[in-house]
Length: 123
Image (cartoon, rainbow, N blue to C red; front, side, top):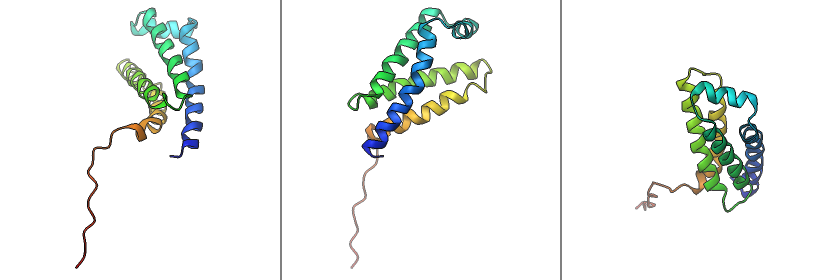
């Protein structure tokens, strides 16, 4: 992906995370209801909200974008596991979609685990 595409995707992903972070940080009644139903303490809801907000800001800065995308990806893995464990399969789609966008943001920064093959000479 080009830098311009990464920038646009970073802004889009950041805009997607800001509302969910504010819902958690402002004790929005649905967020409190879900976290209570899942048995997750409210301080953890606030921590996740703060992490999402920090990650959303980090996605806007090119230097911190891969690290922020990785951190948010881990948060999305936690969200996916929570939804699947509680049988909320419809809600499990959102962490997958968010995770796919975050993967695109961080994939170029991941180490490459392959050895390029040397060109063989034909005689």
